[in-house]
Image 1: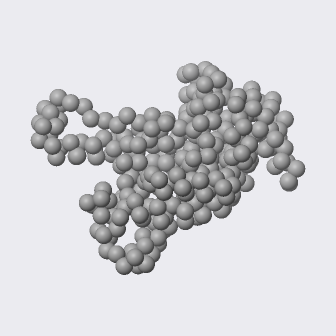
Image 2: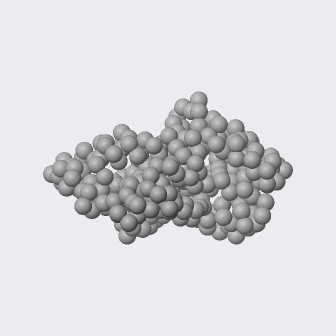
Amino acid sequence: MIYPTATDWREAPKKRVLLFGMSGLGKTHLANLLRAEGNWFHYSIDYRIGTRYMGEHIADLFKREAMKVPFLRDLLMSDSIYIGSNITFDNLAPLSKYLGKPGNPDKGGLPFDEYMRRQEQHRAAESAALLDTAHFITRAQELYGYDHFVCDTGGSICEVVDPADADDPVLSALTRHTLMVWIKGSEAHTEELIRRFDRAPKPMYYQPDFLRAHWAEYLRINNLQEHEVDPDAFVRWTYAQALEHRQPRYEAMARWGVSVTAEEMAQIRTAADFEALIARGLERRTAAT
């Protein structure tokens, strides 16, 4: 680790961290808080995915829909209008809309093969965005003069790395440049995330083997054909199982860095609070070894 001990962390003139864990536990909120204090650069993996790596795919989807409307088609064909996504750190709806959900086209579903194609695009984009972290550390310091750096990852980071592989190229690159910090949720957090998801199911990235197995199982137990699947019902059914699937992967990733609890993170009000919490996490890690 780049900060082996709490003392190394406290004395470091330039602090670089990567936050990971389930979506909804406050990674982006914390990164925004640190950025607001003025000396932390906030690098959002999801924003990078949706702009640099999948922005063209997203814009093309919007244009295909616009081409179905004669009025908009004429304007597009004459270069009279511009269509693009307006992704922000806090609004990733265009990326989610592009990923989509499989199932009945009359309910907004995608053919499963097309859904998997977009999932693969996201996997490649997420890996590339994670590997861009070192570039943005340098850019943040040399271009903007930021001393400190926080990488705000998506919940699916555990799906694109292999924490059991000591030579995993993405994790190896990340740990060379950042301290990886797992925000660990409790069972109560998991239950609340499931309740939130049930109210507003959204597209996510999953490992392909996990998705294919659960898609086949869902079709079998419900005696459905692909085009009969309610897209929201499928992703609701899958979500809780996905969280269970991800938990041991997060735990394995935590061995590459330090762990703090979501309850501890919720108490953070300032950058100084955050720095003190990371020091305690490093002290706990040292005491456990």
